[in-house]
Image 1: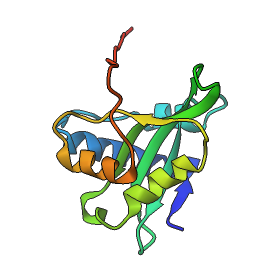
Image 2 (image 1 turned 90 degrees about the vertical axis):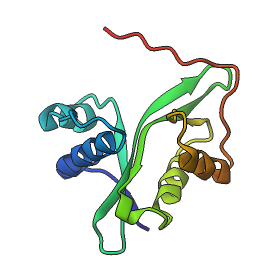
Image 3 (image 1 turned 30 degrees about the vertical axis):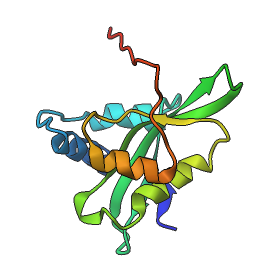
Image 4 (image 1 turned 90 degrees about the horizontal axis):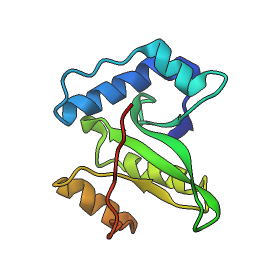
Length: 144
C-alpha cells in the first residue's frame, strides 16, 4: 500500500510538501523551520501527525497533515485534515483517495477540512468521495 505514517526522518519531505502546496496556492513566501515542525510532529507532546503517500517508484508524492478533533454532539473523536496535497506529477493516480481512505479508517467520527472557494476540481473530487459542504456554519479564526 502506498500510504504510511510519517516518521521523524521524513521532516524535510513534509516541510517541502507544505511549502510546495503554499506556492501552488499563491504563497511564495512560506519557509518552515524544520526543527520547530519536527518538535510539533515528533516531539514529546505531538500536536499533529502526517500520513504520506508514495508513488510507484517509492518517492513521496503527497501527504495528509492532520490532528485529532472531538465532537461533543457525536461523543467521539474525529480527524481535522489541515492539509491534503499531492504533487502535480502524481495527481490522478488515486493517491488522494488513498490518503483520505487511510484517514477514514482511523476514526468512526467525522473527518473534516476546509477547501478554498472556487477550487472546482477539489470540490468535484470530494463530492465523488461522498463528502459534502457543511451548510449553515461559518469558520472563525482568532489569532494570538
